Length: 97
Image (cartoon, rainbow, N blue to C red):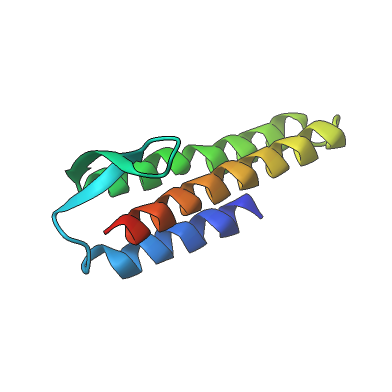
């Protein structure tokens, strides 16, 4: 499930990437206003970092899955939430442009 969510995030970023300006907001204050700008290539870094979560999930399922189903399910939910958070960050960037 987390691999599917990650693939959706990758597809979405690939879809919008060419239409983004070279400089995009990359950090937001608590009020939702951008307070740091950077290159749109930083968005690629976000996708690369988010790839860690499905990878870790797969490793934990192989290592602990047959022994601890609750741990595996909990990690899957956490990883889905983190990837969802990354998707919200991408959405926030698009709204601020």
